[in-house]
Amino acid sequence: MADIKVAEQNGSAGRADNASLLEKQTRTRRLFSTSQLFAFSLVYFITWGGLGTNMYFALINGGPVAYLFNFIIVFAGVLGQAACLAELSSIMPIAGAQYYWTYAYSPPKYRMFMTWIQGWATWLAFVAGLASVINGTIVNLEASVQINFPDYVNGGWHTTVIVMAMLAFCTILNCWFFGLVPWIELGSGILNVVFFLITLVSLWVMAPRNPASFILTRTNYSGWDNDFVSWNVGMLTQIWLFISFECVIHMGEETKNARRAVPQAMFWSIVTNGVLGFVMIITYIICMPPVEDLLASSNPFIYLLKTAVGSPTVATVLTTGITIIGVGCCLSSFSSTTRLTWAWARDGGLPLYFGHVDGKHRVPLRAVLLTCVIVMLLALLNIGTGTYIAFGAVTSLSSLGSYVSYAIILSVSLYARLTTGLKTAEWSMGRLGLPVNIFALVYTLYCMIWLPFPVTVPVTAATMNYCGPVFVAFMVGAIGSWFAWAKHNWSGPNQGVAEIVMKSTGAN
Image (cartoon, rainbow, N blue to C red; front, side, top):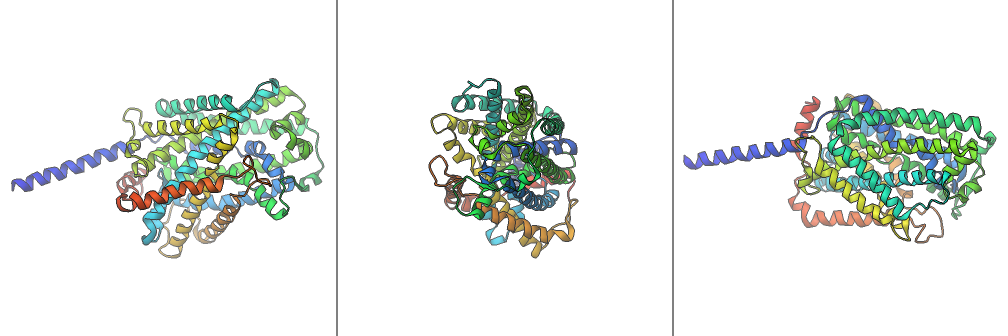
């Protein structure tokens, strides 16, 4: 009897310890309203600004006509992807959602392996994407400085130092003042629309205009002999604009009424960005100087603004506005990446130590600091003669990593639709679910063909697209860790965490 009593006590203690651990992993606060989460997602993209800062790659592969029509193609494809993920997020709005969904809907025989690969692909994509977003914002800031101070030398250690300052800003907010983040993002969302209108009006009022026929101009300065290949490689600019669009899903545990707010914020922010982007891409094309001059400049977008408005002061205001919104974008990207890091840690993909939520501030402080350190180390790659070559080799993970993630979840959700069916959610496509899922999967697989292609030929160390080899190297590591350890020791996503999170959303 004594032995039984001791066993019962030990069992009770074990359950209590487990409950205590789960509480420490899930005690975040639901701070975001639907409008704040919508703004969070809206500024994550800044599509109308990104179309300017990334126009170079589209203009050398296809010219204005490819610049416009590839955007339409990608926007349609991303809407399909977003609709599918929105439906799933309405069922389970949880940080680390993709690998939870993969675990829930995969064929049982392959469930654990696919979940492991999904977790690593998603996490790598977000970390690399965060590094790229912050770096791109700082490069744009430095280019705007050069408008008034032409002697300023950008790149190298200058860029690294400013990147680290941005990371410190995002880290401080996420660790100790996270209650301000929803309001900062709401303000950034409003400024996004305000500066869009200011830029739009400034260009149409002040800039010389090309004839409407200029929209159909085709150019090819990339060296690709095949126009079909060149056109598809040029599409990478538009694909990049919507990478990791599901960022708001990882904020689901800190959102009020998450099953409704998350899918609505994600889908409609993409629609809004698509509309703003379409209007602005027409504006850029009509107001741009000769393509040859743009490509010869050090920063085509800054050159377009300066020549279009004819005033350094106005150009400075426009670029400063985009940079300010870029800070909101960096904050969105940083917040969502830290939540994914936290989730992947509490589910065993990363050390469990980083799955902890601070009891005082109610944020995953350890995961925030880990993310900051990783991206700071990546920023050091800016230093040296190969400034953007080494850094680009890492940040290129974001595009292919995201699309591998989408391919996995779209495949397993299609499998579920054709077998057991999906649970009815508050945000549902109804009968359109199956055809939209098929369309989104086909689009995703098609884009994955072109993501590893180099932008220009012949290929050199500076022009090489490192997307493929770097991603493969990381995935070899993930697969190796599966066979070496996870296959026999990893128990999959923490179902105790999922149960607590779903109860707090009001799910059954």
